[in-house]
Amino acid sequence: MLGINGPEFLILLVIGVIVIGPSRLPEYTRKLANLVKELRRMASGARDQIREEVGIDIDEVDWKKYDPRQYDPRRIIREALLEDDTKPVSPGAPVAASVVGEPAPKAPERVVERLAAGELAPFDSEAT
Image 1 (cartoon, one colour):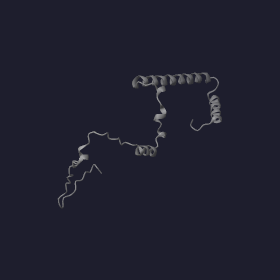
Image 2: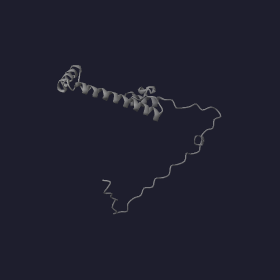
Image 3: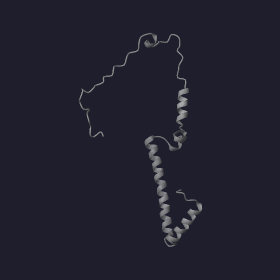
Image 4: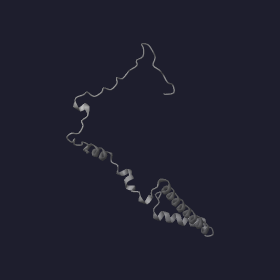
């Protein structure tokens, strides 16, 4: 809470009561109570709105699953590399043509356009 511990909070509370004074204290207490009620009402409304729009109840969501601290990139990569994706081939199953002996189709050749000798390279003043 903003780096304020218990004794500091009590001192600030006492100073606030002294500054506000006993005559205005009930008024400010009512305002604080109304503010807390309004915040609770808004939070409840937000919860209902999320439930209505998304279709899930916030209490039913497993928030640990979405905790970014649980994602260790090294562990995820290690698990992905150690995963066994090979599936055994059953006898009589169709085999791809490229495996049997036909060469795989070649990728189209890349066309490189070259500038003529002495021609300046195009310049885009907005790109720099």
